[in-house]
Length: 255
Ligand SMILES: Nc1ncnc2c1ncn2[C@@H]1O[C@H](COP(=O)(O)OP(=O)(O)OP(=O)(O)O)[C@@H](O)[C@H]1O
Image (cartoon, rainbow, N blue to C red; front, side, top):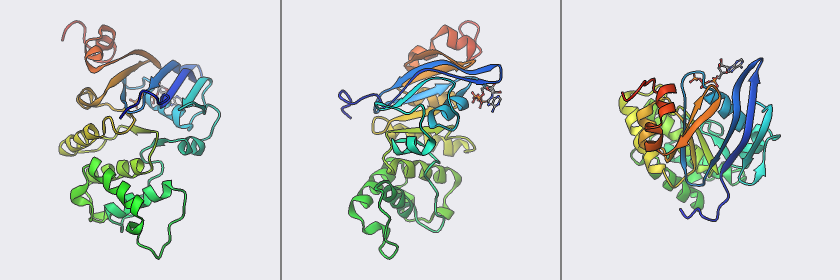
């Protein structure tokens, strides 16, 4: 993807959020470039969920600004932000159990066009939609189950389908909040492989506890500690950052 001329996908400036006297988000500023896979890590209670909720609009900010592309969305509601392309993976996706993977993804792609689909016409009859659905299904490693109904999918595949449906809506940036949660080791490994193949094609903000996943996937990592970003850098920079090792990895010296 040639991203040189594109504006930033997402930008925050000095975000602050209190819960009573607790500053759960403390002066958080960061930029995400188009095509980037950015991970946010941090110990329990660091403020990851709060930050995601500020970005989506589920929580209002107390200070600071949020931009999607060049649009200041700080005062905008959840649905307006979705309309501008900031999507959380489960936000637009109601998976229909009786529909196949392909039909579900077509439906999500079709909805993006803002035109109601004709119930008498097969979803797959819309050529451009079917083409996008095929591409997303391939990107999300769902080819083998393309014609399987959603109710027959294993848990991990269903989560992959939700991500495929979100991507079919062509978001400017996709927020993934612990996408591997609840998966078996094998499902988690498959999900990591899938996310790896999305790299560079889509813009993704990933909040994830699994450090191996984050280290194998991220272009850049931001580390949250007590509500503040204490470091942002490449995998190597973060792996070796002394403050990160102390605060997050629990290392004293060179463990
Ligand atoms: N609705 C709320 N009311 C009061 N305090 C809250 C609320 N939501 C979060 N907090 C507090 O804000 C801080 C950040 O919480 P948050 O859930 O954002 O952290 P987190 O990094 O997502 O944690 P985890 O990794 O455990 O999910 C914590 O101290 C938490 O107790």
